[in-house]
Length: 434
Image (cartoon, rainbow, N blue to C red):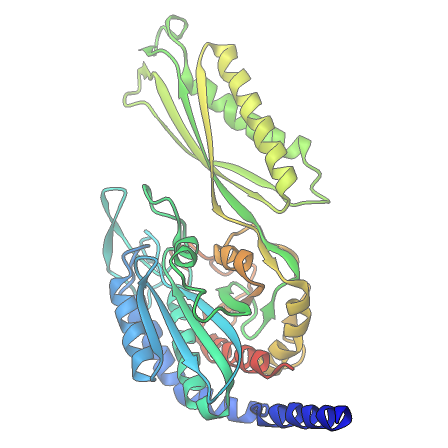
């Protein structure tokens, strides 16, 4: 009887395995991607002409939600203020995987010369500012919309579920907001019901068009915002000794930050960048003001090393201010955690990306980069991998092409089909895993 039960159990397991969706061949994916590409290009250009700042992506979210509903997906809107979550259930049950794209634009005056360049404006810190997709999020939305269409068309061949996450406010929480887009979406249940086993995302960056690159473990730096307020005593510019010169203190603080980073951190073990980027002080050429405000960014790959540098910087800045008779307030707020690519998933992903991009076009061991991404918060909740697509203009040396956040940043639309294909194959191959 026991043997009969064992044989029956084995038969059931084999039968269950045989009902699982067979691997979708790459040629079918290619054909579907080519069919959707003209629409992907149109979506990208439409988003590019209508950029929206973080937590204001109402038009973008509506376009995305309407498209996902037209494909028959379950759609939730308003997740993390303006975020959109779409759920595609395959014909049979199976694993759950998530794909993510970001939606927000930047307060940048576009200078690309594109026929569909942005002329939009928005409100940032109480001011009316130009707005542009100077980071490529227009490309990301269009690629993931295309991937959703391709995968929805293969629903009958899919065993499992794909969750599409369209995230607002990747560029950091606006002033007054406690959380950015990824953290807020997670807090509001973006990764619940169903809960994905893994999440994947991509970003267009300067690089050879058609290339894909990433690395296991620490790939993109943790990002902290640093704010320093110096307080002194206002005086006439001709009588500096009768006040406390915060301009001189600010100069010494900047030099101290630069020296601390260069002389107390081993650059061969962990890349570290500590930059003071803004100085706001004074209103008139002959008045030494009573206060100065500095802000900057700290990029790190090691938590303990980051904490030690922050502690040293706060102590040193207090001492510099005290030496002049001034006081200093020092604050640090994390904008994004370390993008940590799961080692096992990173190794598994390399042949999948090669299937999408072709032999010789995938580098799974690229050096780390000091730019940051709040995709990292999704990776803290579930395992994930984030990778980059080279998207420099044709004939332009990637080292010389305009970087993300530049007014001239103009990613190559020829990589749009590759982005759709990497999304689609990543989801399919993950769901097909035994």
